[in-house]
Image (cartoon, rainbow, N blue to C red; front, side):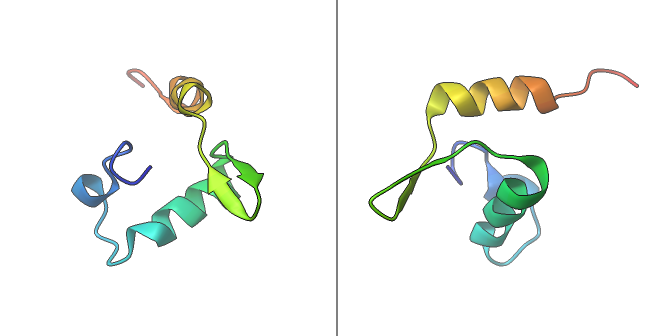
Length: 57
Protein backbone atom coordinates (compact mmCIF):
# COMPACT_ATOMS: atom_id res chain seq x y z
CA UNK A 1 0.00 0.00 0.00
CA UNK A 2 2.90 2.33 0.72
CA UNK A 3 4.12 1.98 -2.86
CA UNK A 4 0.62 2.18 -4.37
CA UNK A 5 -0.05 5.46 -2.57
CA UNK A 6 3.52 6.67 -3.29
CA UNK A 7 3.98 7.59 0.38
CA UNK A 8 7.79 7.73 0.15
CA UNK A 9 7.57 10.25 -2.70
CA UNK A 10 5.19 12.65 -1.01
CA UNK A 11 5.87 12.34 2.70
CA UNK A 12 8.82 13.55 4.76
CA UNK A 13 7.99 10.98 7.45
CA UNK A 14 10.90 8.69 8.29
CA UNK A 15 8.50 5.75 8.70
CA UNK A 16 5.88 5.43 5.94
CA UNK A 17 3.89 3.06 8.16
CA UNK A 18 3.10 6.05 10.40
CA UNK A 19 1.50 7.75 7.40
CA UNK A 20 -0.63 4.67 6.69
CA UNK A 21 -1.71 4.54 10.35
CA UNK A 22 -2.71 8.20 10.17
CA UNK A 23 -4.69 7.62 6.97
CA UNK A 24 -6.49 4.70 8.61
CA UNK A 25 -7.36 6.59 11.79
CA UNK A 26 -7.98 10.10 10.54
CA UNK A 27 -9.05 9.70 6.92
CA UNK A 28 -10.80 6.33 6.87
CA UNK A 29 -8.42 4.42 4.59
CA UNK A 30 -10.38 1.23 3.79
CA UNK A 31 -8.94 -2.00 5.11
CA UNK A 32 -9.96 -5.48 6.07
CA UNK A 33 -8.50 -7.60 8.85
CA UNK A 34 -8.33 -11.34 8.33
CA UNK A 35 -6.40 -13.63 10.70
CA UNK A 36 -4.64 -10.61 12.25
CA UNK A 37 -3.44 -9.45 8.82
CA UNK A 38 -4.52 -6.12 7.41
CA UNK A 39 -5.54 -6.18 3.76
CA UNK A 40 -6.26 -3.19 1.57
CA UNK A 41 -8.79 -4.06 -1.16
CA UNK A 42 -7.47 -2.25 -4.22
CA UNK A 43 -10.86 -1.25 -5.64
CA UNK A 44 -11.99 0.11 -2.25
CA UNK A 45 -8.77 2.12 -1.96
CA UNK A 46 -9.24 3.50 -5.48
CA UNK A 47 -12.80 4.56 -4.61
CA UNK A 48 -11.53 6.12 -1.37
CA UNK A 49 -8.92 8.09 -3.33
CA UNK A 50 -11.61 9.32 -5.73
CA UNK A 51 -13.79 10.40 -2.80
CA UNK A 52 -10.89 12.14 -1.01
CA UNK A 53 -9.57 13.91 -4.11
CA UNK A 54 -10.31 17.59 -4.47
CA UNK A 55 -10.19 19.38 -7.79
CA UNK A 56 -9.42 23.05 -8.06
CA UNK A 57 -10.43 25.12 -5.05
